[in-house]
Image (cartoon, rainbow over all chains, first blue to last red; front, side, top):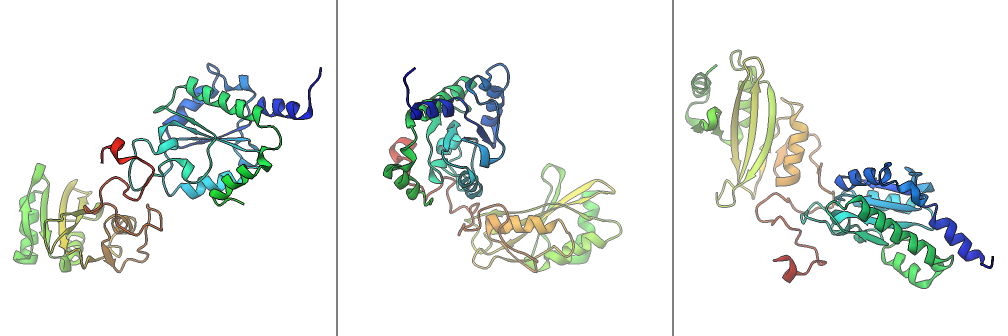
Length: 162
Length: 165
C-alpha cells in the first residue's frame, strides 16, 4: 500500500486523541453522557480521559469560565505538550453565553486559541461528538508541519505564548 | 422572646439613637448610627436575655438616591437559644464608607466583611485582612454599586446593534 509517513502519523493521531475534560458546569454533565456507553466517545479512540494536561492532546472546555478562572485555564493549556487542540463546548465557553457580566470571561478565545466551537446551551452529546469529529478532521489534515508554520507561531504570539 | 421586649431593652439602653423600627414579615428591624454599630452588637451579644450570639449574615445595599447615606450595612443576628432573629442597619456616606469591623466579636464577620468590601467598597476599620476575596485582584471598581451596569462595559467583541444596548 502506497502512503507516506506524514499520513500514517496523522491517522494515528486522529484515532487516539486523549481528551482532557475541563468541565465547570452543565456542559460537563453532557460530556459525561457523551463519554458513557450510550454515545460512547471511545469509538473515536478517545476513551482514555487524561486528567493530567501533560499527557493529553485535546482540552475540552465545558462551562462558564470566570475571569478569575482565566489564568488557571491558560496555565493548564500551557502545560499541555504540542501538538494540542482546544474545543470550546457550549455557549459559555464560546462567548460567555447568558453571563454578560463583570465576573465572566466572554469566551475562552480571549485567553487561549480555540480550534472548534460547539454551540448549544448545553449542546447535546451528538453535537459534542460532531465537534470531536471536526477536531479529528483537523488533526488528520494538519500533517506534521503546521505547528512550525509562521501562521501558527504568530497565532500563539497573539496570545503571548512562547 | 417577643419583638416588643427586644425593642424595649434596646431603647432602655440606647434611647432614641436607634430609629426606623419596623417588623417586615415579623422580623424586628431597626437602624443605628454607624458609630454605635459595635456597641449595639456587643450589647445584643452580652445581654443575658437577648443572647444574639450568631451572625447569620452581613452585607451592604447601595441606595444612590439616599444622599449622604448611600451605603447601608445590614447585620442579621440570630438568638440560637430562643430561635429568634433580628436585623439592624447602619448607613454611611459613599465618599467616606468607613464602618467599624465586627471581626473581634464574630469570627464569621471576617469572610463576610471582606466580601462586602469586595462588592460595595465598604471600608471596615479594624478588619485584619481587608482585600478582595471573590473577584479578580486586578478589578478596580466595586461591581455591585448601582453606578455599574450588570453588563461588562469594557468588552468590545459584541455588536451593540445585535445585543440591544
